[in-house]
Image 1 (cartoon, helix red, strand yellow):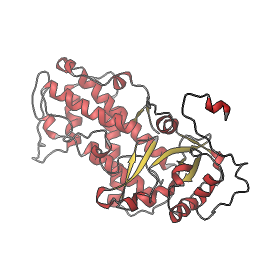
Image 2: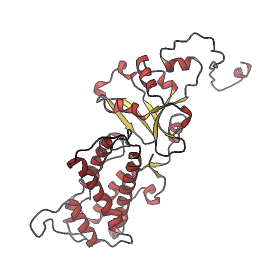
Image 3: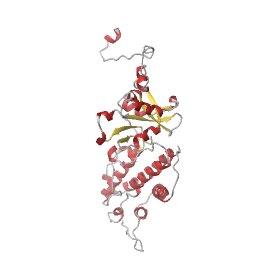
Length: 342
């Protein structure tokens, strides 16, 4: 106490578990009981990823995904002071030690203790068996404890940025943008479902592929290919038989006519885009059994990496046009580093 009196900074004292050993504690609410037993406010508790499905599948809630962490929020129309205490706002993405993809959810003990008893019991039922088996994403601690900036870039945001830059390059060249609609990287500017797959089921994977198909392939504008510009040759919308060509078919025809690349355009750009549509056809035309499969995390990661590579390659090709030099491109896209899949 004498030391504290000489301190000029504010200080706070917490009783130790030893001091609280004989204290009478209400054990009905498990996380409140842990705090009252002297455990740390910022102790991290790990949970099976399935707990988030309780909120994702409830239309009252909004899950905001930043990759390395997320937020659970009540939608405005359902918000009230009573309801606000029903959920944990901040969670971190966690992974089994030694594995880069098997996910769990990390929450501070102090946040769990704020929940009403019945909600604490719900979260308790999803608590991971071996708490020492997990590590939380570094950005979760950096953001919420130290107030620091995360200096890596989520690949989901990089894809959206690449699309915007490609449209800006098109504008500079004098042709309509390659994509009909451009999305922002703020949470309410992104397409619904455009985020990490949390529960690795086949159904969730196919639903994610549908989102990607609409975001990328179905979003390609045929107007881009039907306008002549400086050093750009337009192509016909119609086939020789008088039928409309698809946007992806037009893109393939147009890019081979107008661009010379130092890489294989088919492998880097055309095949990944066609693959999205190919996967999308499976649930559209076939019945399938929904299964839980941890490898779906890797499938989503590979899919996103291929999409990013394809869009980056398109951007590089368009940057080669003399009129495109006026377009300012984010530094991290040019340097092509620190872009990660959480």
